[in-house]
Image (cartoon, rainbow, N blue to C red; front, side, top):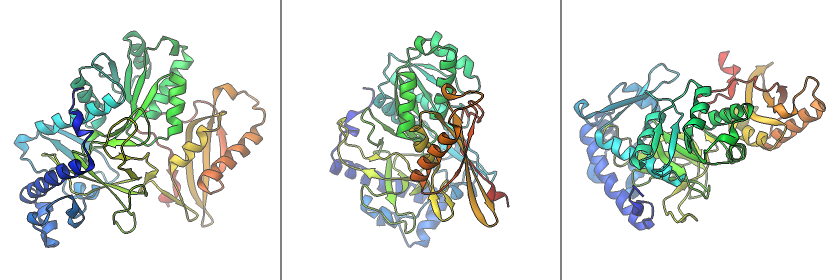
Length: 432
């Protein structure tokens, strides 16, 4: 393999010692190079010498996405601009982008981490990998590209924007691996089925990320395309794709924890929860030079497992995400995550996993309508048993989220498809 296997197979004590040494160095680095962190630590009465290892991480202040926006564009950079060789950025609802800077060493580490993830998905130097993430300021395209090149695979930098060309090249080039969002890959599978081209594929693995998806959606993709699909995770602020990925066992995502130290915290108290319990994922980067982050609150809801995986790796694993703190909908006092709806729909053969949740408020009461797309195999001008199917969907979703929702079945292909992150919620309450 092209990466150091021992980093994935260290004992817990060895990993903790490595993380401690790197945290101490990182804290000293940001204290002397980032005014934002120096002032935060001084307000807490902290000096770099007070952090002697990972056991002291709870003494350090948190960082949020708002902090990156408030210090826009380069206020959190630790390296001088003369050492920053690439910029990425993500837009936000406030209009201010969160800007990320990388040194040459940062890019090398990023490629290494993505290469580990691709290796977990079975990608080798003999593969032809099509990158269907967007290139440019978004980290997905260039991040996946760099990791694939690190392995030595042949890279097809397809990006997004022309799905028909993508499937033509997929067949003509003999593409064996693809990296894209899971919702886009599901869309690609529909196009391939429509053109009767699945039989012509050499595709055998997919590395999907940039949006939450369920195991059931993974199984749906695998069944349609006759491949294995893997979940890759990352955040632009922390690095980009490659922070974690699942292996062939599909029992959690292995974290590159020699570079990114994970914590799971209670969403209310922000105190650590025991391994296996659910909370907010917080990362501290312990090797980054351009934009090192201390205790960055991801808003992602997950749990962590430190036990050795069946694949042999000893790195910590985070579970599939339940949702995000800021994506959670509170409807009539009930916490609802869109991923719960998706998981419920995958069990119903007559519909696709494409859906839209519309939340509104009528007479001071929250309402929920879920538009569900019927599968083409079950669609006709006069759908038999439509009422029974509607009731079946309503019951299944009620069991999943604990709420009654109005179900509206819509025609195949009528809900918009996305080549980037899928949008599944329209919350009209925010418009009032």
